[in-house]
Image (cartoon, rainbow, N blue to C red):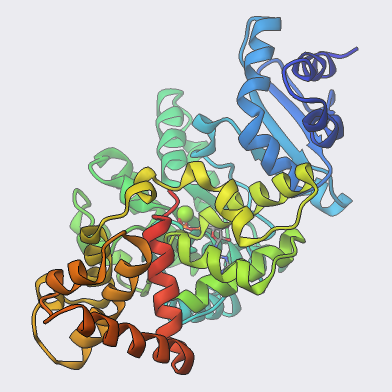
Length: 442
Ligand code: ADP
Ligand code: MG
């Protein structure tokens, strides 16, 4: 028995029969690709790979250490077509190495797999034009926005197109770039460093905000940038903020980052989130009801990265338990991820959530103000309070400064009418209701 198989056998005794059969048994150790400090396993599909990655990778690494004395990086590779094999679709799974993603492009980060909505259409269109006319129009292309909004995906989508056209593309995180630089400097092999980064057709650098205060690397990066740009090679950069806002960055870099096109990505609207979930379901071949998809869209935060984790978790559990994925089921499975708050929802929480979402002040909601937006917010708050707290009608009347319980009862009637007639109102109520019972998964 090879080392990998004996580790899996050890794991067998630690988990249930069912889990073993469903997941671990499907895993194959790759003797050819494993080294003393890395263990490579092959899973039959991305979902199983993901599941094993979140649930068992640490354990596998630990058992390795127990057995051999060294703790390897564990990789779960998805078994695929030959083409994919050549692209080395290895997923690094140990958390510490995860950040320093490999310099390979993720083949599923394509334009086709990217959902376009109001929040990202400008960045999408910019990336698309760069992929069609590289080096000519927007150089550099600078994409910025919050975590999990699709910056890396878009940047790599361009990279994938260019690569298909036979161009040499380097994709790297800024951390990797800094590490590479330091290593070559130490080994006195800067010629090789320069060759590598200045001879490519396109340079894609992720998360450049981390260049902040790294003066020596900034200097080197500046020259790399100049060389590539002068030769008409495409540069694409991402960051979590606008170049102007990156502290500790040389002025000359800041200004150059703005020379081409700066495109931002905003948090997705609800419809875009729904469309992203649908897309991810399609890619991962997970079947979900629209109702369930809508529910998931309302409980996740704006970070689309959560979606894949949630889908593989749901899929894995439903397979394990042989049940369909219903909203109840989703709630159950994601229970640990939802905050404890749901236990004792109080009126203040509802007020904060509603006020924040609708951009009004809690004090306005409780006032006698009759302006449209306030009345709208007040109705929603009253409905949610009635739904989620044990407050009685007289208590609610007092809280919202109304005459007596009949006023609340009147408002409730009105709300129920709106829920029937006004789709937008209904969606808003659902969205906020889910937010309150299930604070964002994070
Ligand atoms: P960022 O680099 O902005 O932190 P990523 O590009 O890594 O975010 O995106 C996180 C995950 O969300 C990826 O799996 C990506 O495919 C997915 N994602 C984000 N936005 C979209 C979108 N508009 N359409 C499809 N998938 C998306
Ligand atoms: Mg990213």
